[in-house]
Length: 141
Image 1 (tube, one colour):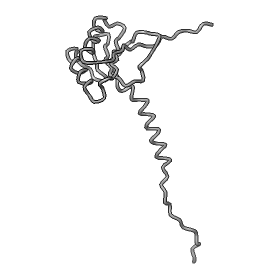
Image 2 (cartoon, rainbow, N blue to C red; image 1 turned 90 degrees about the horizontal axis):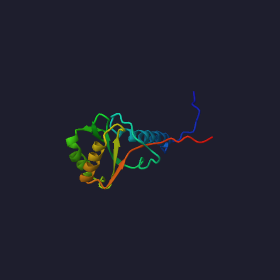
Image 3 (cartoon, helix red, strand yellow; image 1 turned 180 degrees about the vertical axis):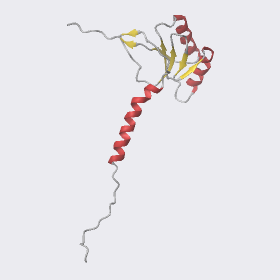
Image 4 (tube, rainbow, N blue to C red; image 1 turned 45 degrees about the vertical axis):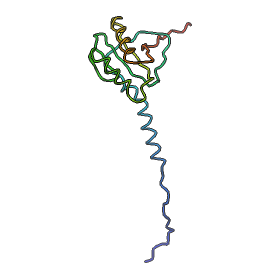
């Protein structure tokens, strides 16, 4: 029996399209989940404001819950550790001009918020902001 003489050829190139597809999906997942990972899991109800800026910038987040618990980014800290921890965060490479965002619950006392703002300033924060949630205005009919 004779085999049919089918032409044989070598695959000389690697198909990279599936690799690119998977890579892009992973990048999209990373971009969606990254902002969620940098904030502490303390329940905070933010005050309302008309504008909402600096949400997409790289920042250091200080969270103050209504019970007085504090967190820097995703780490819960004691009030006495706030200054040194923030100073350490700001001293990291690339964080010299980072925005420090204070996320305080609406039920938190103003005195505690003022102390956090002073601690951030004393730690060397050049840019400080207070986080708010955007007020939804109803359209007139």
